[in-house]
Each structure stands twice: as C-alpha cells, then as structure tokens.
Length: 365
Ligand SMILES: *Cc1c(COP(=O)(O)O)cnc(C)c1O
Image 1: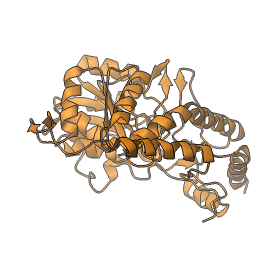
Image 2: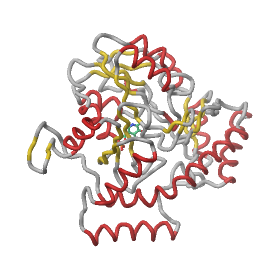
Image 3: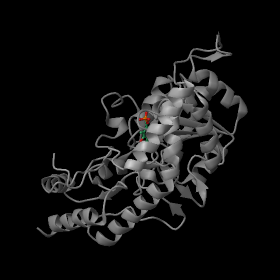
Image 4: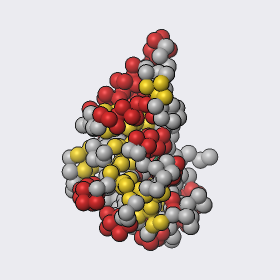
C-alpha cells in the first residue's frame, strides 16, 4: 500500500521509545507478577489522580470496562440505557450484554449525543445515560448532569476516545458515576495490546468492580456473583506507564495538526472547530464533506488514507436494527458526510498540507 499519508502508524521506530518500552517489559519479566502486578496498581493510581477520581480498576479492554461498569451498577434485564447512535459498537454491545436495552439518541453537529434527544427518550425503564465523548471531544455534561439529577438516572461516561480531553477545565472521566476508558493501540493513550480502565469515587462500586474483574471472586477463592476474567496484563500497564510520559507531547501534536487543518481547510469542508470551553484531543479529526465517498476514493488514489468512523450507526447494525428504540434523524444524515482524515501525531506539516491541498483540489475539479 502507498503510505504517503497513513491514517495511523503503529510501528515504534523511535529508538529511544523502543528501548524504554522494552526495558519496562524486562522489569516485569524479572519480578514475574504477569497479571495485576505492581505496574497495574501504579497505573491505576496514576490515572485516578490524573482524572481527579478516588478509585481505578484496570481491565483488559474498553469493552470490558463498559460491561463491568454497567454490571457493577446493577443494570440488567428490564432496564433501558440511553446512549448515542454514533459510536463504536462496543458501546451498545456492553448495554445489551447485561440484558438491558440500549436506546439510541440523536447527535448534534459536533457528533456528540444530543441532550434534547435524550430527554425525549426517557421512560419509566430508563436507568442510565451513557454518553460517548466522540472523536476526543467531551459531551455537554452539564446538561446530562441536570437531566440525570432531575430523573434520578446514573451517568456512565465512555471516555475511550477522549483520554486527556477537558471541558470547562474538567477532565474527561471526572463527570460520570463511573467512567470507562480504552487504551487499545488506536487510542490517543495507547498500549501495545488490549487495555482498559474504570474510574469511580464510590467505594462500594469499586469493591464490586474488583470482584467482577475476576470471576466475581473475593479473597482469591470465594465467588460472590458470576463474572468473567477481565484482568489487565502487567506488561500493558508497564508500557502505559512509559507512554503516559509521552502523552502531553502526543496531545500537543494532535492539537497542532488540528489547528493546521482548521486553517488550511476553512470554508472548504465542515470542520471540528473547538469551542472556547473545550480542550479536545482529536482521537480523530473528522470533517463533514459533500460527495464524501467520492472524496475518499480521490484521496486514496493520492496515497492519503482516510476512515469513516463509523459508517453504520449502532441502531442500524443487523444486531440492533428493528429491535431497538431510538430517534436519530440527524445522525442518519451526518453519517453520510463524516470522514476522518489523517491526524495522528507522527504526521509532518508537509503531509498535512498535502492532504489539505488534495481535498481542495477535489472540490475545484
Ligand atoms: C475503542 C472504543 C471502545 C472499546 O474499547 P476496546 O478497548 O477496543 O474494547 C468503546 N467505546 C468507544 C467509543 C471506542 O472508541
């Protein structure tokens, strides 16, 4: 494949980074606590502190984080959880696997779940709202807090795409009763495999999560409720502890690339412009474009790799279509227009300019 402008590049070609990561793995080999080892505890403490939360539970994926968080809150059959219609399918799968029903709200032009749409979908069965900070931009959490307070609902944040994002100076992951993270290799804060994290301030939930993370057991042997194995590998935690040191630079670079695109593409396509109260981390830089599919093909022919995240709305997936409640007309039209253009932190100014020039060339032709 032509790699002139790759969407992502997961190779670790920086010698210093590679050596540093390898020696962090070596330390794990030497102490031998391969699962839930000291690096897991260190990472949990670090992330809890970073997000201003009391407790953190490392788990083996963002999908597990969501599922276990919902289970720990007692959500199950007969309950409804309102979430967005545009997200990675893990979000609604976690709800459905508890036995509860996902209810799909519409999105705003910022691609985040729309509070007005959520209000209209609340029923006697609604237990929780699950907002996703999509593309690395925090949802309108003030509105959701108000809705939750008024209707006695829980909030579970899906922070998989937004590690390090802020709104009104508050960190992503500091808003919900529970917050769920993914650190899979595609995310802004990325391990070299699968990894996830759950944050909360509630001690009882924390203890239940610790049990749920390992077959519902306490004291290693006694099972108090059914569970699966969702523990985090120590090697991934060790890698994440090193990567955490690089995170400020990764976020700085992604934000810089976003500013470049904002300048270069102003007036050409719809742009994810940041509002004054926001500090976005640009998990994706998602434009809204006329003739989106043609543009994508054109860019591909020039060696520019793009992605549509995600081309199928969650309620329109075969697993949910015709079975789920919801209201998502704006999402239906936006999903035809969204395109994620390369914006990873390894790109150069030249690659960003090349991408922008080709987008402009497409609309001139
Ligand atoms: C990546 C992602 C997940 C799932 O995380 P995994 O670690 O891949 O299981 C959940 N929700 C959203 C919004 C995501 O982007």
